[in-house]
Length: 279
Ligand code: ADP
Ligand code: MG
Image (cartoon, protein in one colour):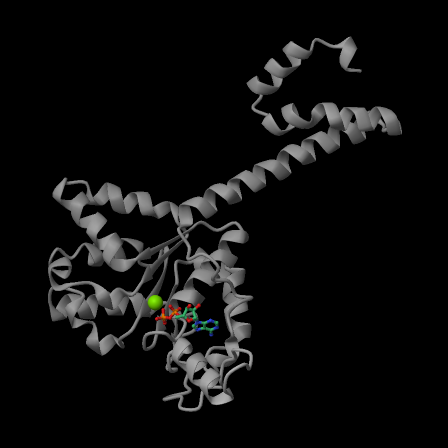
């Protein structure tokens, strides 16, 4: 087959049509087709499927690259038995994505350090990304810093607009925003802009009552919390630090025993407050 056509021209045509996967693979596929006597329709379909599969793979790779998720944090490696107040079934349902991301609802994870908030947030981000949603994971202070720079350059609106392309923006450790970061209120601008349109996943070491430091004044704190909570699911992850518990368990089991985690013994509350979708 290949000797009866103008190979250089074919390469040019495939370039022009932007079909790089077919360009790379058509010879091998055509050889197999000749050998196995495929009908022409099957050959064409195989080439088209190949291009599409490669396109999906490249898109996923690009989205993974831009998402800045925490490496190695997956749902498979998350031990749900360590946070009995978080329902695995509910997390899995949220990772299907469509229902809450389409209407710009939020997810808020609150609990003391080490309880697995960042792990769970990043793992959910990955699961959603694999379903085709676009996700960005950032430490809140880093994002605020970027937005402050943009604001000084009179480009805050554009910077917030660039974040619109993410179906889910994960703001890790919102309570770590410092006083001087709060004063410029860029975070409030971001929250207001995304309200009811684009989803946020927020992790916090402190319950809402302690959020006074994150925003310039009490009225703005109230307005921000109100917007965040309005359409949101809240997981209260009141467990002891996972690492601390794992270390204690190792000690309890003595040397030479496999590292294992303990079932939480002193869980403060076991409530899942869960402001489910509005009617
Ligand atoms: P937080 O963000 O709440 O402070 P992290 O998500 O950073 O806590 O968790 C601290 C460490 O413990 C991380 O290495 C994380 O992978 C691990 N970890 C926490 N909870 C779990 C869990 N339920 N299953 C598996 N690993 C966990
Ligand atoms: Mg964290």
